[in-house]
Picture (cartoon, helix red, strand yellow):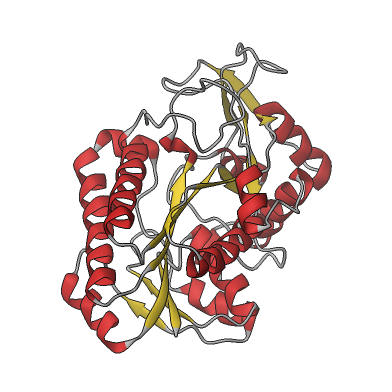
Length: 338
């Protein structure tokens, strides 16, 4: 039996597919290429020697989605598909609810109809509220501050309700923190459209000369150097976490949210310094006013991942910045250069 992977050509989904195929898992990949490139499929084949079994499907298209479930016997689903830009979600929340919630509901309905009972979901630390305590455990209150986070939290609630109603169902939302890095070969990495929303692709775009300077939003937080502190995790560690979560879901029922993070934080300036030192390059930056909604600092308690999945991060901040730069330096324009 195979594993259905939605959003398979996105940043995290594609790295998961490379690692999972390398470990011999039988995958069926779907994506609509709305925020990714068809060239990712060539990279997956290059890195694994396996031609991906791929289908261009939008989860909002129930007819195409059902034909997929008719044609395959899926044992599990790993669900990455969804919009993910916080700012965009605030500007157009209905678009986010329509895509992230309706598409996910369609997927869950098909799983119910065809008796597929194992779901690993790409969730996010954005489901949490302002820190009541650090590090975040899975018991920390959920109170998202933007529509993107709301879509993740809402679908988690739906999964939890369905797991309570179906004693055979296993729902594992993986709440990860700040994924960065790239495949160590330099052949695959993050390729955001337009101006990057996240720190690392912004740093690499500045380092490669496509952007003039990095904006650091605030240096007056109560942190080690005044800049915001986040828990960064290498995308390859994240991929392995999903593989462990599949095995857990196939052997356990119920609803089990799990944090995936390094369990420590780095400030913006610490990440910049690590990037410059590891890659022997400079990243010009300018401190500007704080962004509304940004938090001073938070990081994960990853104890549950260690206990239930036997998983913990293996790659360091030095690995993250080295691999991010390896991808950007080799392909300055992302997959358009491939």
